[in-house]
Image (tube, rainbow, N blue to C red; front, side):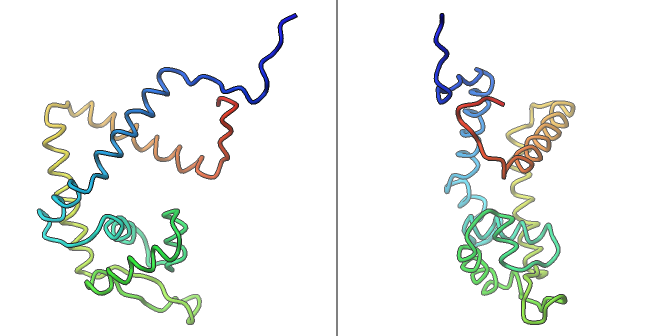
Length: 169
């Protein structure tokens, strides 16, 4: 009689999933490097840190929202968002407006200056991608975009699912 492995024994990851995880980790590192951010800010003519840029981009892509809702959507602590919002307010990139559903609360809204900053950041980022992906065919770029959308949608869809390292999906 053969003994079964204990229920807590790790299940080996497929080589393909291991490769995907490795490449995603490397891509995240390259995209998040401080030198890259500093160069992006210099070319865009802005002085914002990485966290402020992420928050500003998110605000630009949504309706005005409460800071607490923004923190939940970004999966960060409310105090982190509060600090960044102060920086963005001082720079004139966002303003606080009354919440129409609760006059005691406030929502954060992007300003024209904030929209202009996001536009500059996107333009510089797009030019960087154009250079890096210049040799890719239009078909490859469309497939990459579709797969990235699918990847992000699946990550978001499974963000609250508890990961059990002893079982494979």
